[in-house]
Length: 376
Image (tube, rainbow, N blue to C red; front, side, top):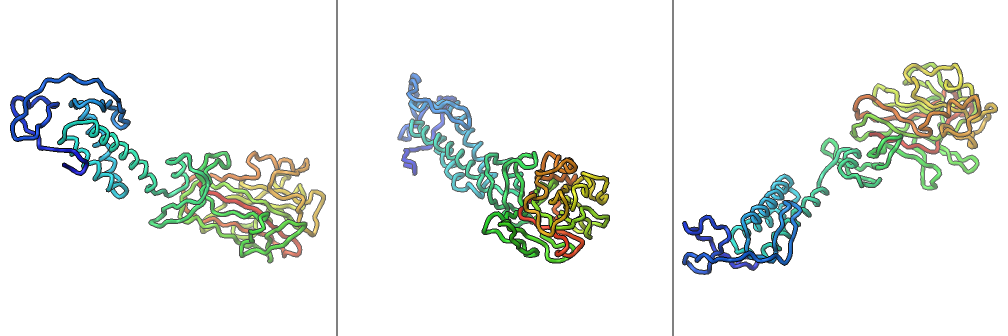
């Protein structure tokens, strides 16, 4: 008896039966007598998904084709399991035992049943190994597991495991698999401002603002993720005499608003300007942004009728809404409130968001209450 409850004996080969693969070995040392038999009608037909072989479970006449097909199916499983040995060593042992069993014992309904179950175990093992796969980006997860939902995932980057929020739905008109570098939503009472900014509340609107002249930074590390596209949005608020865009370098205050750059030295990603008057933005006047900005910017005014020494909470910036006629072109980009920057090459640069003004906060200021930055 073996561990599966089958009685086994080594086969005896003679000249008389050397070509007959369906003969069985008797339980003594004498050579078996050839017995004529009629193939019995199958009572069940089990379909092996792995090999496409029909196994007649009710028949004790195991023919060579059935054995060969089942063994091929098992070998196919074994090949896969060998390639995934770290996940499936226990399954592999069971598969080899079943292969040995198939070649040494009399074929019966129980043998067929166990072999079919072995194939199922192979399939289950292959499915299970998918949980052992590692990915280095949200896009890889989306590609290999299209049904994945948005949430936190463990990515393996530079031999390290990092937790990343993956957005699996479309963003900026591009399919899912986006990694989120940062998010702020001050409409949620549990949210706090980045450490570089201060919180003020005006008309029940919680805003994160600058507290000094110049630029104040919000780092958004890439964690080593490779990307070639940046998709994001920022919602801001204008206070008093913002000047839109200024003719200065990328490291200075070239915008009264929000600057988004990557790497060191800084490379431009996107700019979001605020202007005292509707006509102060390049999109609504002859004014021009710095050459490195190009057309990668949004610009709006929070006070269509002129500056006020308060935050314009009634007209948030860069949301594409409430744009009078002379500002209408500034609200026409189809992706608003989102922006999309195609870099043209793959990078792992960290991203930096800066809130900038060239005058003191009591004269002009910029504030934000929401942002989301994703890479892919």
